Image (cartoon, rainbow, N blue to C red; front, side):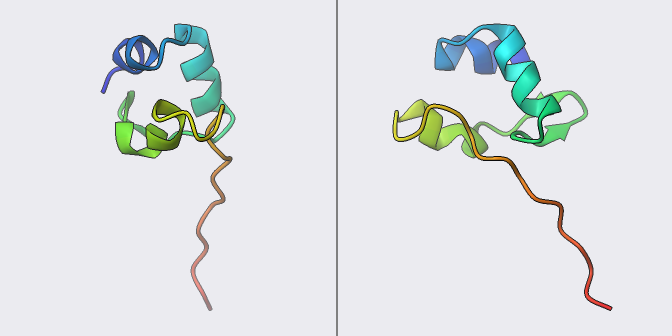
Length: 59
């Protein structure tokens, strides 16, 4: 979904959605976001999505 679509569905400002992506709370897929990452925010169980940790390959 586009950032503006996500902001509209969540009732949050566009800047908030973009900040969450910058903070690593959302994964950007060529400037679009997966709404499933925001299901806990959408249903009200959390106020902000958790920060994502980078996956590393085991040596």
